[in-house]
Amino acid sequence: MEDKEIFEKLKKLISQSMPDVNVKDVTLETRLLEDLKFDSLGMMMLAMSMEDEFGISFDEPVNFSTVKDVLDFIKARQ
Image (cartoon, rainbow, N blue to C red):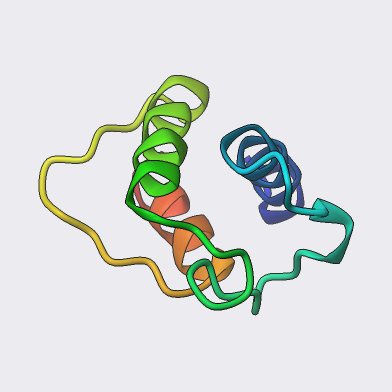
């Protein structure tokens, strides 16, 4: 799967996890905590959505800072 396709799916998952976020403004440099105001529940919902959408699993705790960190994590596990 190409970066652009992963990014578009990721924006959809962000929107589902955090409905108040305007995903049109989301870029790869967007910070999850500072810019999108993700909290622990939002991060957990995003992780569960990623597991379903991309068929990946979280075997250990991961700290994502930016949307690019999430995209790179998904790419490395496909």
